Image (cartoon, rainbow, N blue to C red; front, top):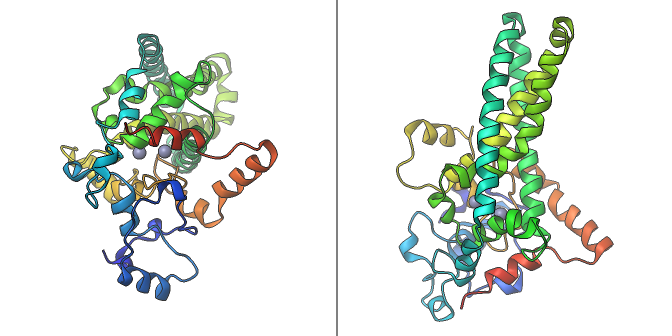
Length: 323
Ligand SMILES: [Zn+2]
Ligand SMILES: [Zn+2]
């Protein structure tokens, strides 16, 4: 539990936990000593926080038994959590149909756009395509953070239409992070593929309705939109891999190790209660800078001040349904 070995991506500005989620934390003096010596100005979410305030997915058998007291109140995380079971049961056949339609439509549009991009590609534009790819990744990473933050922090499962269909999976994911590893391709990717459909649809329309000169003039932007939509569509699959501790293909582990995809160790920072930071889940590149400028906290303060709504009220309500 050596804090000095933690990567910069593990650092955060506000180490405070809400009292509701501050379950029996025994503070390790050595942890405090190191953090006060080296990281006085930027306290971090420590290995101790991760161990005691999140589900140990690499060792789920020790779930809820950090100090032997938790089991009396019902498991705090995992498939046995009563709230998680209730949320899992709200997955409906109508929702499943929407996901199947979105996945089929999106894959069709991906193939069509790939064909159109390759057909209009000129090799001298390779540097532009690489830049477009980078900007696309960054946009997708930021977009993943924004949507994830909004869904985690605001609204309720009781809200009509969006509650059960789109907020439910976010609530379930916090109290049973391993559920995503049991979801099939459709359930994992349906909603992200849905977000990519309008972008890919507009892109295909542009390719098909414009002249060759217009297409070449806007090619960099088209490449950016294409790659951004691919990363957006792939985000929850990447997120699922960041929760998968067994049987991952070697190439996925390699991309995680080089932080080209969201690494498992990095994403665990988000899964420390009360889930108030590290929302970006495509590559996670923006998590540290956004935390550094207190981006999410500032947004939450503005919204709380103007609307009176408290962040993560619904999330905390579900977390407490242990019995
Ligand atoms: Zn979350
Ligand atoms: Zn997660």
